[in-house]
Image (tube, rainbow, N blue to C red; front, side, top):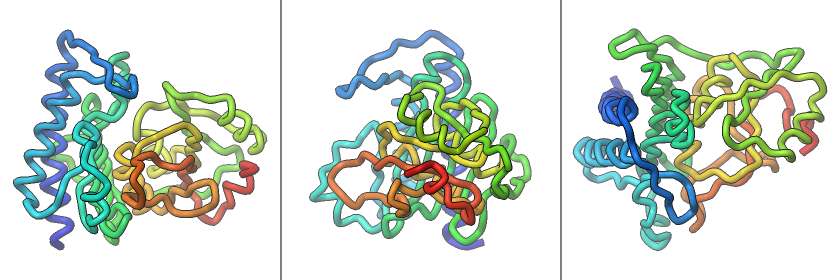
Length: 266
């Protein structure tokens, strides 16, 4: 087992511990606060954050951690990082509040501006998608279950498009219209990437704002399953390259032999 695989195994266990804390709060009543950008925050976000950050510091003391809930680390410090953890302790807080189950725990290890390890765990279902650079992408359906390899599919004649449950936009609809006939599947959080990674959808177009912790773990899963994530100029999505932690607009695709950006009219 490589060092990266060993770290990945420990990280999956850490994600499951965080998920247990999230579900404990999910089962009861909880308050909702608003952060400075008006995005929601719950006790579950913070409980998951604490477990993951403390666990990662214990696992790899020499690797810094950037989490959505501790994102005030300045660029002057961050720009020197070649290797770091990037964490969204509860991706899809709006879905958590709606209690529709479509929220995830996202943990990624970034090296040279790209994710080399990605864990995306869905607490309600127990499904855990993960990718390890050079080793492939896998789905662990329940704790202790044997991980099954997953891969993207060839482009369908009628494309299936994974779309946001909470962030639909007119611009997105107008661009998707360029595909001609297609079918939409609405899904919250990073699960849209996972649908593409396991061959249940062909693409996910995101024109609204996202942050780097929203995408890194799932990008690794998708890339290891045979897909990719591109900005609207056709460049790979990269991490920690600038002061802002916002991503450019992007498309996550399964069949890399199809020019989806051209088909979308980008």
